[in-house]
Image (cartoon, rainbow, N blue to C red; front, side, top):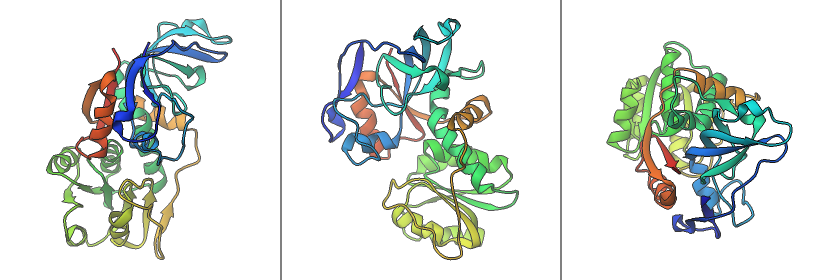
Length: 305
């Protein structure tokens, strides 16, 4: 099969498509013909050697896929063969034409979802649903969503709006701000511009909830906009060190629940993922470069076939 292999940590060009042996499902596993593979920002950090994990090399990155079950391993119901599914892979194996998944992790592809939508909602959707459950924005509250034009950010905007909250979408380009507006953000700001925090304060008078997926100076500025007791949900550090909650701020932790439950809720529900870039498997390096350059609005996907 064709797969994208990482043989050395470094830049996007370290991702090279080549022929590798087909994988085989073991006990409790299935073999999936991959139609769509997702890419996350964390995977770009792993590739560069800066991520939360350093897999043994050579490695095939990729955690989320959708496709058709071709075969099952020992102890797995044979009726799964031929089914359309979406699944996490434990962090590795997705950038390939074939992937092995645990049967327990499979989510049937709902009739109202395409494979692309399901993959776009798998990791980002479970993150957004979990963060929203924990922060619990309420009707009339002001909520700031950082990186509102990204995969997780766009879903957080939708979930906050559905809860009746008033949303400020913070993003680094006009296109991403427009995407946030289309999803329901009442106010949008460019958080790469000087004075953006003052602009938010003038528009809102202060925030009730901040979803901080950026960290660094942006996360610190966003935290400073919270009212006394306001809720800070920290889940990323794309722009610098992860934000440390200060005094007078209520830190919101991610809920301790089954991630598959959150993913299934996102995929089965009405959320609309924004897919900004689709590329063939062989162009995985370009996909990583685009994510790192912050030029993609929404989710980036690989299409192996």
